[in-house]
Amino acid sequence: MRKRTLNELVLDDHKRIEELLDRFDQLPRQRRAEAFRELTEALVQHEVAEEEVVYPAVRKFLVSGDELAGRRIEEQAAAEELLAQMERTVSDDVGFMQLFVNLRDAVTEHAAAEETTVLPDLARTATPDVLLQLGEQYEWAKSAAPTHPHPHLPHVPPGNLALGTVAAVIDRIRDAIRKAS
Figure 1 (spheres, rainbow, N blue to C red):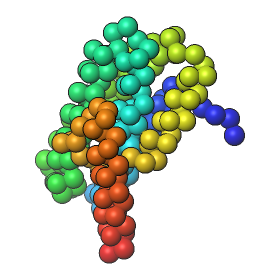
Figure 2 (cartoon, rainbow, N blue to C red):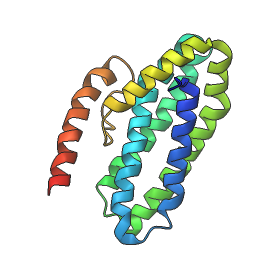
Figure 3 (cartoon, rainbow, N blue to C red):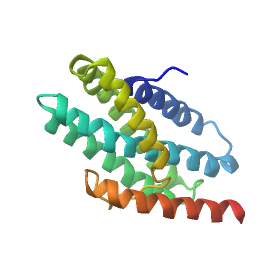
């Protein structure tokens, strides 16, 4: 199987998340809770992998990397806060749907910003081999990431790496208990 670059993996995630967001509105109310769990897991794991792999690379390879990474991480933190609020709200509540609209708008804007600035700039400045290595790191970070939002955890290394691992273990226990019930 061919290794994939960081950019390819991020773009694939964006497409999957966009599809999850698009179909959510059309689902019957009784299927929204499970669809929201799937969306939440995809978003959280994507965001964590970006915080652990993409944004350190942005800081390293791009001249204005600190500023650019800071803006994108702030956007992700806001989306994570929305997800946390939504997890505390019943999925067929009117308030939930307003939060969903806000989340969809924020996620769409964030992905567009990454696709027009971050990814093209990384493609120009990092070598193909580096982008492949970053792709491997990104896949690993996603697989080890939490499955629920933790907006109060740090969003930058080293805090996100240490505390994110603990949160991921707790989330997986929480998910297993939910599935067993």
